[in-house]
Image (cartoon, rainbow, N blue to C red):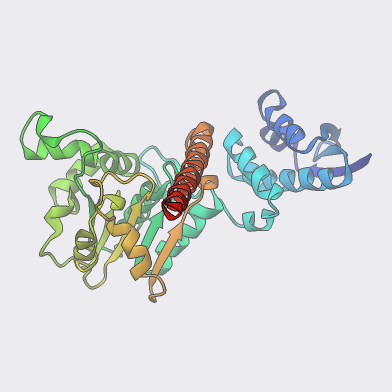
Amino acid sequence: MAQRTVTIQNSEMTLRIFGSFDRNTRRIENAFGVHIYNRGGDGECDTVVIEGAEGSCELAAAVLEHLKKFAAQSDVVADQTVDYVISMVSDGRGDELNGYGEDCICISAKGKPIKAKTVGQKKYVDAIKKNTVVLGIGPAGTGKTFLAVAMAVKALRAHEVTRIILTRPAVEAGERLGFLPGDLQSKIDPYLRPLYDALYEMLGMENCSRLMEKMTIEIAPLAYMRGRTLDDCFIILDEAQNTTPEQMKMFLTRLGNGSKAVVTGDLTQTDLPSGQHSGLAEATRVLRGIDDIVIHEFSEKDVVRHRLVQQIILAYEKYGRERAQKANAGSKKRFKAKRIQ
């Protein structure tokens, strides 16, 4: 049996890493088949001992070293963080965790620092910093819209832009606009609610309402963008998988001098009518390779909602592959039978 030791600077830090009732270390033990215990220390630092198979001890020690960095930045090391670090180290991608989680994008209305929570999110934020147009594509819960809004607020506070413009295509997900009560604006508002929620998180409701009254922040359906030239703006197109190719081209050509655009969407959740092609899917093919335009793709590892969301996404992907394989097999059988006839 091999043994490894990890030194932690004080007992308070050890408590954060181990978690309530050692829940974090139990997750590491279960993941790698090792035993972890705190030997204590000399009052200045604690010595954590890991026992198990040689390779497993190395992996568990690497996880603890990364968790030390997170514990230094936060009062609590969340279950989600522990699971993510375990996953990255297990996949041999532990080196990618270096420097991640350190940069604060902005401070929320409640004084909470907004940071990238995964390596994929950090690469997305870095892409937005360095490029004029970024397409963020990935499953639900990866922070595509939330981080884009955070970057927009940061740019506005730094006077890098004079306005924030948020837009979505008003496409129904099984419902109909006409059945909603009220005038046109009242019918449209539910489709824009996720954008309001992200802004309220960053700026607070009162401050956000004031900026919207001054037109410093504008939230509108995509159709309202036609014919405009948007200078010195941070523009976000959300739910872009529901745009048509014509709408996507229209949106991208609104970009004016000093502006930045972020397009977000999930190609697996298109609500367009059957047979209609997604403008986002087409844009990923048309725009790939153009300088100052980045297409960033998230994976299920970047999901930062409830841990079950990641498993749900994987389950649907597996189901989709199996269904496609069955359909392909059935098509081959029909073709073969037709040739025999």
